[in-house]
Length: 229
Ligand code: CA
Image 1 (tube, rainbow, N blue to C red):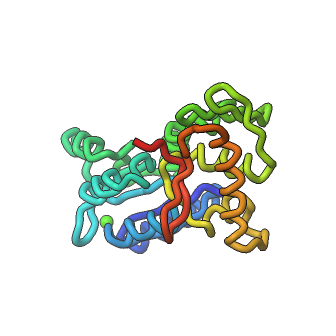
Image 2: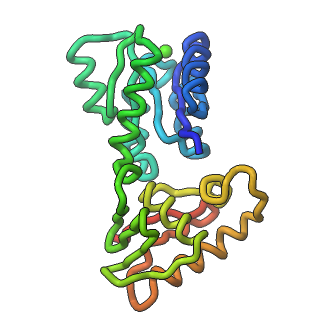
Image 3: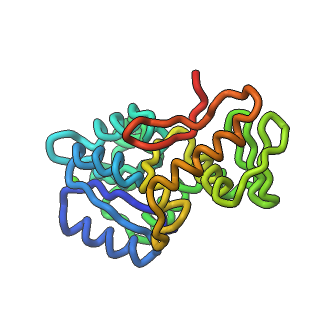
């Protein structure tokens, strides 16, 4: 699964250059020319990281960054601000608005890609770890063992992949279609309702006893892993 980068930039030439370099390095790319479109793309495409230009029409990159941070589903989405400004005050403002990193134009593609990989690594330290944890659930990625409150939970292979994926993105809502893409794979033909079946099995296994339900159903939208309250 290639990581998806959302480029938010109104200069077509720069978008073309970024897209070319990112695709060459194994990223998938989607784009938005302004903040409003960026928020729509984030909701629909669930990018793994955002490259956000400071100078955008209508709403500034700084404000877009704040809006991304305000939405629960994108609160932890890694953001790198792109800017022509290079003053220390700007850097501080960019980082204060919630950006994870800040890169001044002109920059080399190699530098940008190194920064992208760094923020993605920091945002998902889980990917590098052997045990994912969320609330009282632990998923041992090496031994393929799942526990809740220390007790072993037995899951089928699909439920295991589903839980692993949700635990890698806690709090984010995924549509059934996106879950199919990420958990079953792009090339597999499965009905979207299959997702509901496996979510039901996952819930049943995870919530056995009187444990709190950590899988949240978002009506007409999909599912998320969430700790209530
Ligand atoms: Ca711009």
